[in-house]
Image (tube, rainbow, N blue to C red; front, side, top):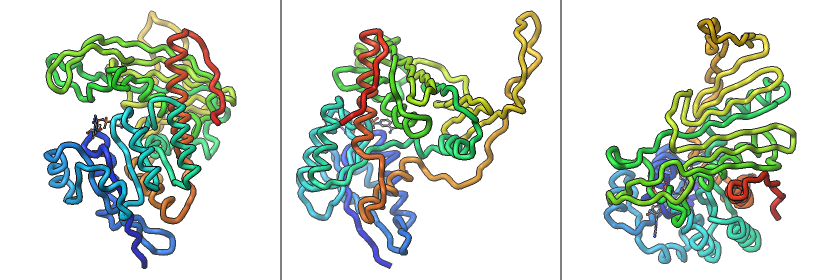
Length: 382
Ligand SMILES: NC(=O)c1ccc[n+]([C@@H]2O[C@H](COP(=O)([O-])OP(=O)(O)OC[C@H]3O[C@@H](n4cnc5c(N)ncnc54)[C@H](O)[C@@H]3O)[C@@H](O)[C@H]2O)c1
């Protein structure tokens, strides 16, 4: 058995996503399980260096993770041959310059979404990777959520018949901070800091729709900023300049209609923070993050409209829960393992920066559609 030690520069790892999903639940979890085992018995072992601006935060990360290799000097590790991969989970606006630098230093690149703040920059990064033989990937974590994998299995087994429509309901109440502290960073609500729910979520909906239901052909989107003022991390009031809600309809090439509501200003009375309802001629499913409920044609009740009596049907009764049929890992970790394999063995990794650029494209078109109050076609990216 051979061990392939693979150095990873982890930048933005002091942030919410960097710490929780990418360091603790992915890279550290992979190290703790003894690496990623390949078919021939070899093992890939990550060897991360944690990069941040604040030495105190890095110290805290070391205490949490046991990883002592940290630096506040990104350049010092960028040109160090021990590191083959550059990973970026910084705020979105900082990604383009950092990834470009990593490509110039010959590092393979893996990064959070959105890849960049506009399509031109995202495509430039992809082109630079192609020209310089740089392996690249973008986080598309939702594809490995147990609930969505269960949906995929149903589709593989022709559960739905012809799929007619998909309804995505995403969101929850993000506290404004005046009394109860906010649970998301303030930059999310500021346009000038590349925030906004359209930029954030339409990237996700692009790969979820493209990979599961069909290619997105056109978009109509309405953005809203329902909450005008919030309180930041330092206790100061700020004006919300970015959209906190988006009401988007997508037309797919295969005729399926997908409608996604995304909002940080709704209260949850549904199965999960994200639910996807898929309705087909033979059956329907509602997937949450982990679970999936199904109703077949034969279980479909036949309601009759009559508001003058108590509803005689309990609509939840005729749904069944998809049981656990296979093991599921953390979604971010599952994708990390595939990227590490891709770097070491050249195994396929279709979730590259071009796919990331498509997400940025849909977000851009969503914003444009909202501004123009108009349906827009989604042209192929070159
Ligand atoms: N895949 C997902 O589901 C998902 C979910 C949330 C966020 N994200 C993406 O992850 C990225 C980070 O989001 P987050 O919620 O973790 O944000 P965050 O604010 O918690 O973290 C941002 C990180 O960027 C670093 N940073 C910010 N300004 C910097 C500067 N001037 N110099 C150096 N470093 C700086 C911070 O130190 C921190 O490490 C964003 O691009 C966001 O879109 C992805």
